[in-house]
Amino acid sequence: QVVSVWIPGDQLLLDHPALREAEKDYPREDIYVVLIESRERICQLPYQRKKIVLLLSAMRHYAERLRVRGYQVELLRSDSFISGLLDHVRRQQPVRLLTMAASEYDTRQLQQKRLAAELGVSVAVLPNSQFLIEFYNPIPRPQPGKRYVMEHFYHAMRRHYGILLDDNGEPTGGQWNYDKLNRQGLPAHLHVPAIPTFQPDAITRDVIGLVESMDHGVGSARDFDLAVTHEQAQHLLKTFIAERLTDFGPYEDAMSSQSSSLYHSQLSPYINIGLLDPLDAVQAAEVAYYQHRAPIQSVEGFVRQILGWREFMYWQYWQQMPGLRHANSWHGHRRMPQMFWDGLTDMKCVQHIARRVLDTGYSNHIERLMVICNFCLLSGIDPYEVSNWFLSCYVDAYDWVVLPNVVGMGMNSDDGYTATKPYIASANYINKMSDYCNGCRYSCKQRSGPDACPFNVLYWNFLIEHEQTLRSNPRMGPSVLGLRHLDLQERKEITEDARQFLSHLAYYPATDSVPGP
Ligand code: FAD
Image 1 (cartoon, rainbow, N blue to C red):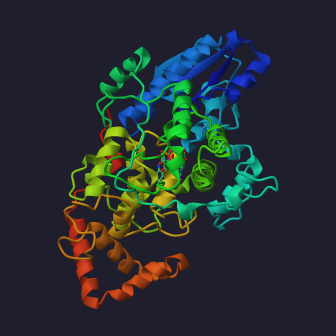
Image 2: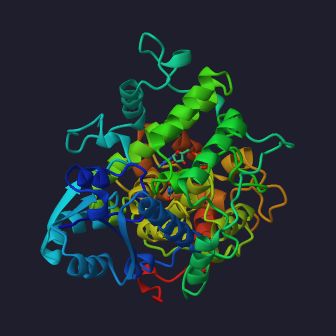
């Protein structure tokens, strides 16, 4: 008699709960681990090719690791998860199938509602161990309709996990938050240490060949150089702590035409698929602080990203699904602008960021929030289309993280559950936080006219169009007050400029109609 363990490709944990559970009753040679490369899942959208290489190569390396540890491992290429599992169950006739709850809604529905019936075998779905709120949830029973802010959630997480606390249980350094110190633009000459890259081995080279032959996708797999094993991901964490954490805080919100990553960690692709443990990353940063290798403002900033934002977003996702996918508070109905799919635009910021995302699958959080989502919210783009663009283009994109970040945070389209105000800004913000406006064909100073930066035209147009709604939000007061500087004539010009701009913009077809492979 054998038992089976199905491990989805974003759960490549060294210590997997389903394996631990299986080992309570079975020796390793009777435990079949099933990993499925599902064509249906891989082709759901035209995905970033580097992401598919990362996932498939990391799965294959993980399979090798489990074989060495003595498990039976089946790595199957199938049409879908179900067809792969059916095929496996027919051949091996396990007494039971164990699996860990997926972080994504659709796969978890499949596990909990259909799997046992479709496979005709008993199925146990174990709690997900990739998120810290699965062990301690600061808001286990939220009141319906009540809005919760990240800050309180984050304090509770710090207290529970004992991170950056002094002997009295108070925040180290006296403050929970050092954001005020962390909003610096980049000085002109700055040395940003390079992030280590990895030569593809034979397994990765095979996967690159496979992915290059797929006929739809974003970017190229040929220059793939990301980590694909736990050891390589650990090396990246160590290098980040040693070389970039110190400057992470001050320049956390900066943007540069030279580099997207700057002092960011670029660890999300690995944390999201189980190659790195979130608590390990948080504790590594904390140790650096206590050993005087990094200042509190940087360490706290990094800890906040993982223990605060990452966990809060996962919490929001599970509060708001399945409605979050189509939430649309600002009633945006335009398609995604074509320029995000090809980088062809005179707007220097969008051009640089879109090209880099299409090429590398990465941009930092301020570029995602204050350039891409800001533009899309101001332009009335449908949040569903925006989230599909993110899901397609980024190496670290998964449903649980894209929907709250894009629909909730960036597009402010979930009735303010994730963010209590829309993150909108004019070109002034982009000019302050980046070098993009230097040499751009548009003027970041003009509010209307043919040379005005579209961010200005669209920003003021958004305020005019939604003035009443924005006035009712106390956090938007100062922005709306700015409207008093516009006389009737200028309001008309802005509205007309925005209408012209949006009607001349090229739009990508609806993502549901993107042809499959
Ligand atoms: P760092 O700045 O070094 O931060 C450290 C880590 O904190 C990240 O690796 C990540 O694990 C975590 N983190 C920080 N902020 C968030 C957050 N808001 N949500 C979840 N984790 C967070 N993150 C993704 O992992 N995948 C996405 O598809 C994604 N889409 C986003 C879309 C928008 C519109 C926005 C505003 C944010 C999005 N994020 C996403 C969150 C954040 O931008 C990325 O996690 C971060 O940019 C990844 O780069 P990094 O590893 O260099 O991050």
